[in-house]
Image (cartoon, rainbow, N blue to C red; front, side):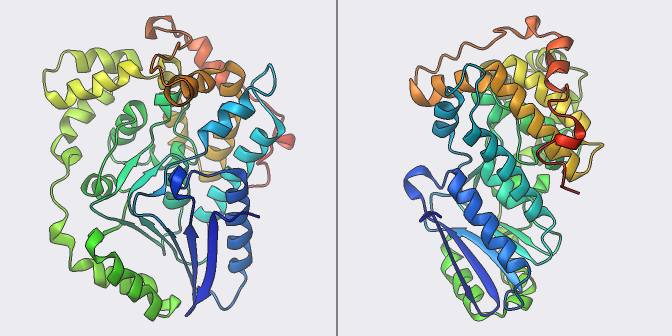
Amino acid sequence: MTDYVQTRIANGTGLIILDRPKALNSLDLGMVRRLTETLLAWRDDASVDAVVITSSSEKALCAGGDIRFFHEAGHATPTGGSALLEDFFTEEYALNHLIHFYPKPYIAIMDGVVMGGGMGIAQGGPDTGLRIVTDRTRMAMPEVNIGLFPDVGGSHFLSHAPGQLGNYLGLTGLTIGAADALYVGLADVYVPATQLGALTALIASTPGAQLPAAIRAFAAGFAGDIGASELQAQRATIDAHFGAASVAAIMASLERDENPFAQKAMKAMRQRSPLMMCVTREMLVRGAAMGVADCLRMERSLVRRNFEHGEVLEGVRALVIDKDNAPQWKPASLDDVTAEMVDGFFAPVWPASAHPLRHLD
């Protein structure tokens, strides 16, 4: 199906290696299908006791979805969609759900860039699994930067982050490293990049059934090497500002704070899509009260509304295609975003009986 996903089984462990280095392992539809096919096969395979997902490149586990494909497919029709685009998001979110409820330990080595769709295939593992970060980890949900919203289950895992940390990450789209990822609860253990060779050897020599415990014991020796979390140091600032009642109120609160951390957050938000920041905040409010399946169904509807509106197409054009870094957001100002606009994104696209993810539970 694709040469970008390599798989093998050894010593009770199913190993998935993402191998699209020139695109930082950005996910296309073929990769999503290959991952799904593999995980479904291994789910019922008695010779597989654990799954490890990693990359052939030290630069990234996965930088997200293939946004050039989004732009091309989104321009295929006047309404901003195509059958391939519909298939991509339906199947990607179904894959996220499959990973979240996987019955075997699912271990993600989050070395290098892990953003957007990469978070979807790394964050959703079961409690028996592990999310490993390194000193090269660069983690983010940066979708508001391209006029989208934190999807692939972001409405669930960001809304369940402590305090207002999920709102901070979702609305700013800013990148964090290993210490912050561990503090927010988006990672479990830290392994220095210089020790990944030893980790690979450990994985190869340890029976799959014993792998999570063996990796935890291995990583424990590096727990003191992680460094300080900036988000922990700034937690009171984050909670004070990002707990405000609206995006406009958050930005007004940040503007009054001379703390360089607050000013950096405000500067980032000024570059984002005003509409999609408001949609993101509402999505996280709703997601906090939903299960995983309902979160993914909500996101699937939001994606359709977004492409109909065209915000992500403009964002990708400005940042990736034309690279003028001057997206023409609609509306251009936060003052012009109305509650009706935001509510429109959450209006049902399909009857419940016809939703493309209706079978998820």
